[in-house]
Length: 119
Image: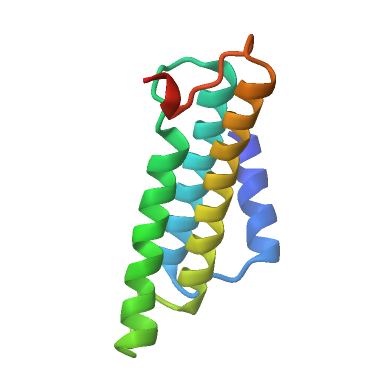
């Protein structure tokens, strides 16, 4: 529990969230990211879509924010320009991690790395 409080204090010291929903989404995203890494590293599950499913959720959120904020130019408490870039960065990170998993599987076939190719 102390580690979680330390992480929160660190994030609060370097980040400014526009509202509580943005802060909540950030912590949910951070938690999902850490859990997905743990699942990939320790292979406690056979679920091969961990990175891609999280990338999809961030992609959907980023597209929704883009449509509302940029195209429709609607002021929204839930969506903002920051929402677009944050979720786009998360999509890139998850796709890169999935690509890294594929590369590792090809270079080191003895390692058990979860990819779509094996299903």
